[in-house]
Every structure is written in structure tokens, then in C-alpha cells.
Image (cartoon, rainbow, N blue to C red; front, side, top):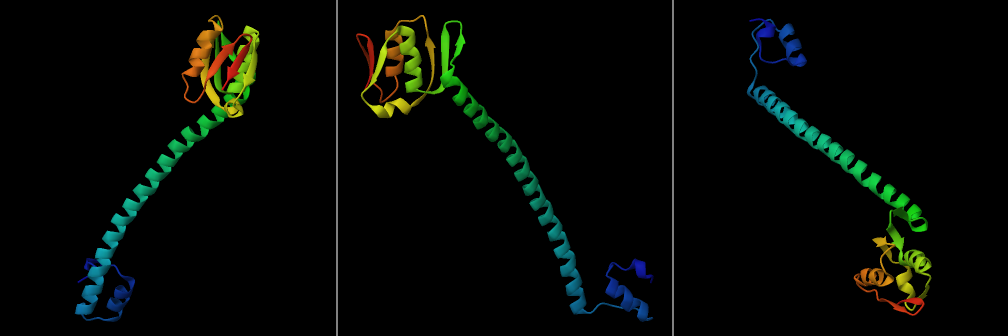
Length: 163
């Protein structure tokens, strides 16, 4: 029987066969070791394929969410910096994007030639995303602001009062 006809490709076994001219038969112990090695090799390949699939899936997920979640906040920060000082004017509509109530009411009060009085200083720093129609009366804008929870805005003669 030729050495290549054997089902084992172990270098140590090949050397043992070369040294012995007699036909070599594996012992019970060797047979168990060889069969465990074969089974372990199969299991390792399955485990490696599974782990590789998990790693590639994780990388793809991280790349997808990393691009979408890092791009959005940067854009919003840019809008937050640029929009409150210079609101976007499209025809007669002004869009305030992530602007503070203080900057919104300053712009609105200037347009209607009113003063702003804050009785609750906490409300000054609240941020809003809101559209204001410059041709609408001040009462419409006050109604729009009052729709938000926790804010009460009213007009008293030449003053816009925020409570």
C-alpha cells in the first residue's frame, strides 16, 4: 500500500511509515486522537465561518450607522449656529431652526415694533423649530407659541410678555 493511499496526512505518521517497512496499523489510542482531530477541524471551520459572518455584519452595521449618525448632528449644529442669528426668509415665511425663544421673540418683536418682557427667565433658553409668517398678525404668532407646553405668551399694549 502506498503512503498517499492512507487517509491520514499527518507528518509524524508519514515519518513513522517511512521508518517501518511493515504495514502500520493505528492503535486504538491513535485512532481516537485522529478522529477527534478530524472532528475538531470540522467544528473549528464552522465556528470560524460563523464568527467571520458576525464580524463582517458588525462592521457593516457600524459603518452604516456611523455615517448616518455622525453626519446628522454636524449638520444640525451648523444650522443651530447660523439660523438663530439670520433666519431663513422664503417669501413671507421665516424658518427658525433650533433657535432660542429669546432670539425668536427678538426678531418678531422688532418686526412688530414691540418690546419683550420675560417673567420666567428659564423660558429664554428653550429651543424651537418653528415657521413664522411675517404677514400674519402678532396674535397668530402668539397663539402658535402658546401651543407649546409650559409657555404662556401674551401681548399687553406695546409689550410681548413671556411667563
